[in-house]
Image 1 (cartoon, helix red, strand yellow):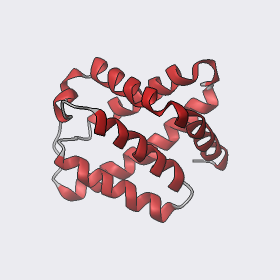
Image 2 (cartoon, rainbow, N blue to C red):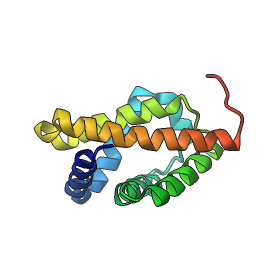
Image 3 (cartoon, helix red, strand yellow):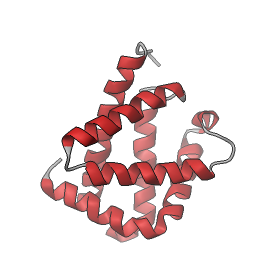
Image 4 (cartoon, rainbow, N blue to C red):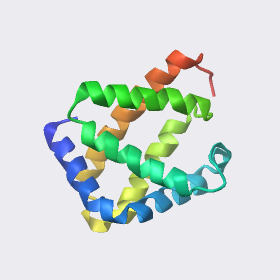
Length: 142
């Protein structure tokens, strides 16, 4: 990620924070709408899950400028997600849902540059999580 992209992600996340509940609800609505099979990986009561999503995004955004902390936290997240049933094939779906959610949240302010910055941030997160998950269990072709 470029320094400009990092700034964009941090600034837009700060703007989204007051709408955290809307962000998390919209994200899961889009994810489950487009990929209904992943619904079974989540609890019936999504309240804690929605809070965890926002907390995780906040931790990622906060630590994106600190590679050691970022890599450690995101790697741990990737390892934990293997125990929830997450597979490498799920990551593109999550990324697409996140980008669509931000587009809904920001409307016209979700410019090409903002989209590219978030795509780069999610790419870094997904790559790190996938690499960490591969250390926990053998990779299974899906």
